[in-house]
Structures are given as structure tokens and as C-alpha cells.
Image (spheres, rainbow, N blue to C red):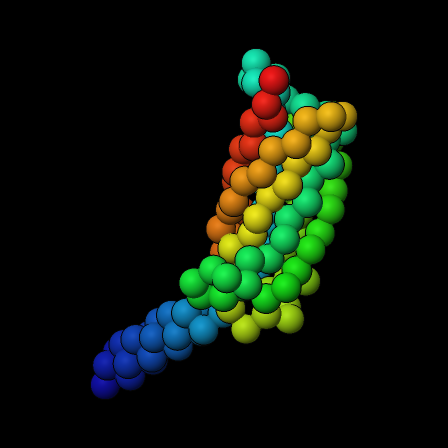
Length: 125
């Protein structure tokens, strides 16, 4: 009889642990990483990268703007946590504008909550 009681306790404990883990919300960061390259494929340091929420997307993305300069490795990493903290959505669509010296290029990217999304923008000659 004691063995049967331990078996039920073990099964109940395993179910409780499984349910506990499934109820945890993901803590992975929400990051939008954008690489900037020249037309000859060289990574570009010091390029200005602007992201703008696209309200015309489906689903619609709320108004949001952020600007960073590329690092010595030629990319920026936008922390999207503030966007998802105030947005009811788990997906956002953003226009990208990249400027360096007299060159400018645009792009488009989809971001997801708790995911690192990556896009590359190539500057013209």
C-alpha cells in the first residue's frame, strides 16, 4: 500500500512540475538587429539607422520611432522590449531608413516579441 501511495505522489509531482513550467512566460529579449553593408559588401560603422512602426501593416503596428548608429561591427541592436511593453501585439512591422554620408537606403523588417529578428540593408554606390 505504501508503494502505491508513493507512485501517486510521484505522478502528481511530475504533473505539477510540468504545468508549472508550461505557465512560465518567455523571458527571451525582443531585439531587432540590423546590419549595414556597402555595395561591395563591407560592414559599415557609423551609419544612422532609423526604425519606424508601420501603421499600414497587417496587423497594424503602433507608431514607434527609434534611432541608433552602427557599431564597429557594422550593426545596431534595437531593444524592442519598450515597444512590446506598451503594445498589445506580439508582432511589429517596421520601415528602416539607413543614412551614411550622402548615401541613403530603405528596408522593411518584421519583429516578434521574445525573438531576435535580423535584417541587412545594403547602401547604394
